[in-house]
Image (tube, rainbow, N blue to C red; front, side, top):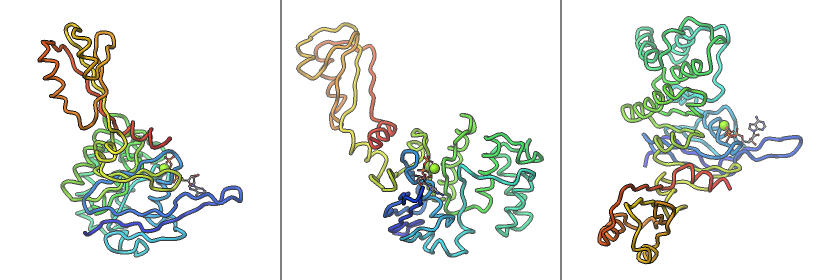
Length: 303
Ligand SMILES: Nc1ncnc2c1ncn2[C@@H]1O[C@H](COP(=O)(O)OP(=O)(O)OP(=O)(O)O)[C@@H](O)[C@H]1O
Ligand SMILES: [Mg+2]
């Protein structure tokens, strides 16, 4: 298997008031080419530190990071990756168009091609109207959209996104998520993402790792990790009239107002239950199923 990104035995501590605090403890990760991988975990878990170790901003005490088969200390790797963090800032007096042109130069992109890419990114992130506004005057969301455009200027093969939609309004968040999906699909871009929006992770990531106090405590396919920690789901049915109460009790239902409720096992088939109710002549007016979400999973693992 060819991995786009591997993290092996990474440990990093910071000293805080003379005390050693471990931000990362023996982190191991293998991210496949073309996958969207989510890093989850409570505040202070070590996600940003891990991102910074991967990009080389923070040096780990032990362990190594390989990007596209090369050590992340290898300078040639920088041209093939990019990303955004919650703290992507530019000089206050610089204007977005200058910033994008500057980065095109940094990446050695030929002028005509650079202008083509800038035009495309400006449209994608709807930043046309602010191209001539000083960075210091931009709103949070505008600055973030600019940071996103900058992150795609070199058409990176590996994209590191630390809370990509933080502070964005729902309309732009939706666009950003769509765009993340698109570049991943069309350009087979490998994406490592952290987010506190569980719906976002659920929508984007195939696999996740859950980090707590600097340690990976769970990892795997999103659906599978949920299944592993929750083996039930909730079912409410609203019949036209509630009858056959003994039968209902026998098959595991309890009455809740106008509804009957049952906690179903993950393996239990909904159609079997419906057929049973139907056979007793019960007319069903409404049905509600609540399966565990990634948010339920997050809360469970954070405890
Ligand atoms: N430069 C630093 N100096 C000292 N301590 C640091 C530094 N950077 C991070 N830490 C500490 O390392 C731990 C992990 O922080 P990190 O920013 O990686 O968490 P995070 O998972 O990104 O949290 P959040 O969800 O709030 O973004 C925290 O305890 C933090 O205080
Ligand atoms: Mg963080």
